[in-house]
Image (cartoon, rainbow, N blue to C red; front, side, top):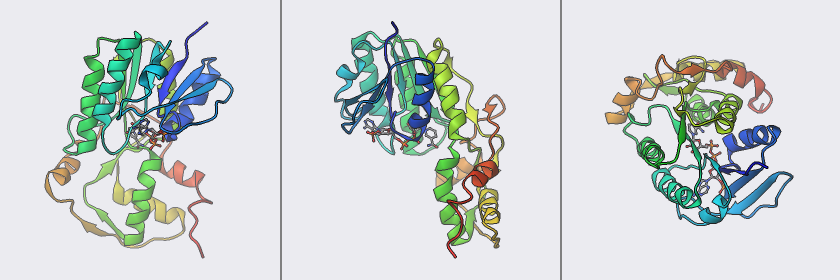
Length: 257
Ligand SMILES: NC(=O)c1ccc[n+]([C@@H]2O[C@H](COP(=O)([O-])OP(=O)(O)OC[C@H]3O[C@@H](n4cnc5c(N)ncnc54)[C@H](OP(=O)(O)O)[C@@H]3O)[C@@H](O)[C@H]2O)c1
């Protein structure tokens, strides 16, 4: 009998798309969550907190493979260190981490914490797999909505946003396979300026207006203008575009008349 796969962040957006794929492959899943939840067929929940370091020993009991998706604006470095320490104690055999493209280049705390989380996995002594992914279409949408309302967009800010279903499929594949170290980054079909994403959003809603352009100041602005958040040529590109995503949400994003 195979051991359960521990998924931290299994209740989040990416986790909700990944867990069913692990289930469909016949694996039992254990999800670590900060909240107490009812078990479902093939899925059990353990209450705990990766940043506080609580519940991890119980969550890792009898587990060989860990998919670490839990994350937030702060503390991803500490969370990874806590998880790695508990995984060592439990004798885990494969640690899988989601990270973000440009983790080691962007001068922003979130990216720095992701780079530190990567280092914790790489030096864990446990075989590991790390997948860096671009921002999800779902992540870009709230930003695009605000910019559309403000009728403005920063100059030189580009994303290569990707569909959550494509990210989940790749994560499931890597989690079910042997450790590969750094997997090729997974990004969306193309590099797109945020202004272009706002125009597509407006046009999907039957609107169009001139955008006021502004510059992002400081080191962060320079890094974005240099494309330090982008994956480069070696990345694997998904197929589902920003425009496909907007079309799939046509009813939800329709303007209130
Ligand atoms: N969204 C993107 O565009 C994107 C791009 C690249 C990488 N990533 C990374 O992918 C991961 C998942 O992203 P997502 O969009 O699915 O996030 P999300 O929807 O915001 O979900 C966050 C998940 O993390 C869990 N979590 C947060 N803090 C925790 C803590 N201290 N202890 C235990 N669990 C905690 C939450 O579980 P409970 O609330 O149940 O405790 C939830 O399941 C994150 O690490 C994120 O940085 C995201």
